[in-house]
Image (cartoon, rainbow, N blue to C red; front, side):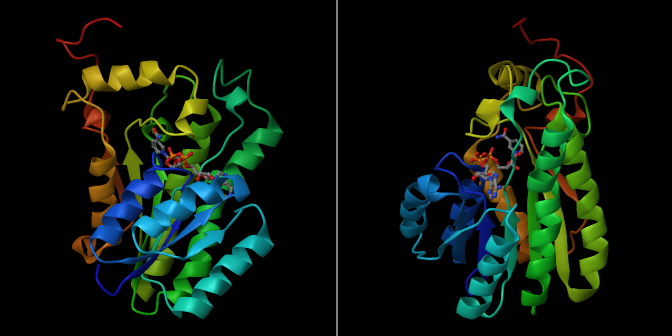
Length: 261
Ligand code: NAD
């Protein structure tokens, strides 16, 4: 990744999936810029950026057009070009990540979650593509709850399904300009965003006991696969949804050796 410059959107702390991938890209030689949402997160993100030699720590709220304009204007002025983009942004009101989806989903949160967690990737790719003058790679984070029903994932399942469909349309649009667009479908990991999902510990335990690798994924697992998708190692891959979930997505039923939980 030496000589490559990448924008990482969505780091909250050292548990963030965005950070795991940013670190692997920086360790592989890339220059990194990272965004934070709100001043409270700024003081968490700045030391992380400094630890990989970056002083490009920029504010960004994806719901605020002026903030998105300013972010990409700064990248253009400071770097002139971009080689990769990681979108690790997601949000839903946690009160709607529990109970029955049919009863517990409001129009307001449905729309807001869709804008923050799905549309913002399309918006970011639209802004990044013209800066990717030597081609580029854009990656977003998704979850298996888009494909199959997972307990309490509810509105985020619908939102991630929209995100995954967006990846395919973006890949088709940007491909002629040498810009690849992919999703990384991570297994459950303990992060700030995940702490809002009802019974998340049960989901993690179930995945650990029933995935082919009989474990949950680590920050390193996700970091390495993120590096693969963002680098030239995946030069022929676009429109893909890469599951980094210890193989859980191939499982049809409970493992015979899994104890009850
Ligand atoms: P996280 O809380 O560390 O990261 C989520 C990020 O989204 C935070 O940095 C937050 O500031 C940012 N964000 C939320 N609203 C925003 C807004 N309006 N503008 C700008 N940024 C905003 O949690 P994470 O688990 O690392 O989440 C990163 C991505 O990975 C999300 O898309 C999440 O859905 C996805 N994901 C997580 C898991 C998991 O189990 N943790 C599994 C699969 C996919």
